[in-house]
Length: 68
Image (cartoon, rainbow, N blue to C red; front, side):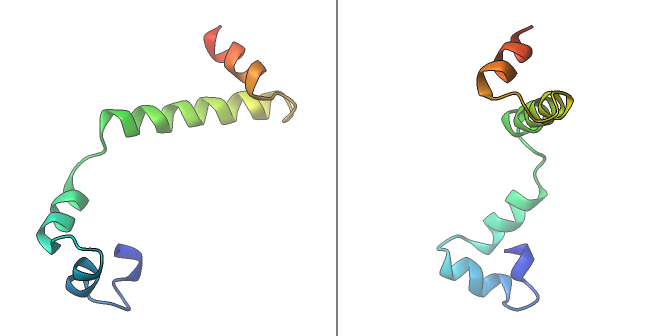
C-alpha cells in the first residue's frame, strides 16, 4: 500500500483490501517478527554459500553446508 499511496489514498486502498486504515498504520509501525528476521539471515547465508561456490551448488549441497 505504501508503494501506491502517491496514486491512491490509504483510506481507499484499505477499504479495497478490506482492512482498517488504523490496522495498516499499526502494522507498518511494528518491528519485524523474529521469524522474518531469521528468514532474512538464512537467505543471506544461502546467497553467500551459493556465490562462494561460483553458483554451482544446488539445494542439497547448500543444505549440507548450512548443517556443517
